[in-house]
Length: 383
Image (cartoon, rainbow, N blue to C red; front, top):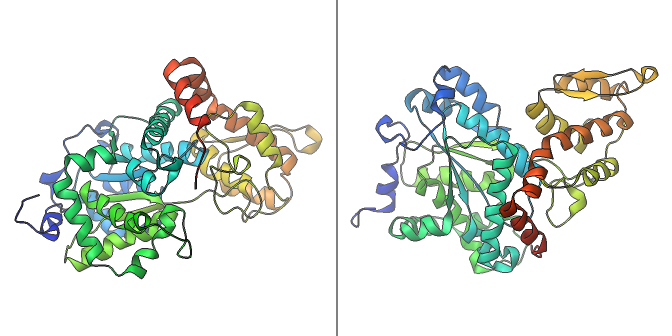
């Protein structure tokens, strides 16, 4: 940042419409070279449960050949399947469409949020373990860049902190408190001063990383909207596009999202085959009910996107073997009672175990990965 420039002036230089500012970092360009703008748009739009705004996304893809996409995670414990497989699916779509994906390893943020007791060394171990999982499960690393927040912020502190301060200065406390959902908190929680500062920093990250697209979960929507509001405040024309993906529920009835502190609520990426079988067997899966059915959500958002099919094996008197290639057909038969939970659950367990096998094998056969997992399992998860 120019010492004489204001944060607003510095941010304005990150215009997404400027082709000259396209990232020179390696991108999966060969995958996208034959795709039309419309094809890229359709692929990217398939990631988001919501897109703010679609016309801006189309304009970005038409004018900037190598869009920068921001994704991130807070290293805070073992990785569940939504964070593992779903993120790999989404990142692979982004790089296939020609995006350069910057994955922000939010180690300082985990410390601010008191994850793992605020121990930065433990948080670092968890971050390394998570990267190891994505490599093992099949995230395509061409076009992906992992950035540790502590290192990047320290190296460009003169850019980062004036930006954070400007965002904080322009927003009232109630507006910032409404963003506490991004930390897994609520406005009613007793928050530390560090946690109140957290949304201002996450908002700043978007501009600090020169992101054109924010690809995060629906639970991060509020701070992404804050970034767009900040653009209005500073009269910046080009706003970050928000692509918010679906949040998978927990496996038990009434669990809106998975919890790392409740092992029964989720499949974890290095769960043993027997663990997966038991968890799915006990999972909430009422007959004929589609809405809020976690087993069906696993099929829709993990199995079908990953395997392109869902195979059910059953006796001839129960309908015989059947392969579903889309969720609509499966949902219709489930709702009509033609597909029963007793047949669906074993098929789901088998599919999930097939997806997770390369991760399991990697953490058993690779000495470094094995050591990371042992250490992570020994950490006490703190909320």
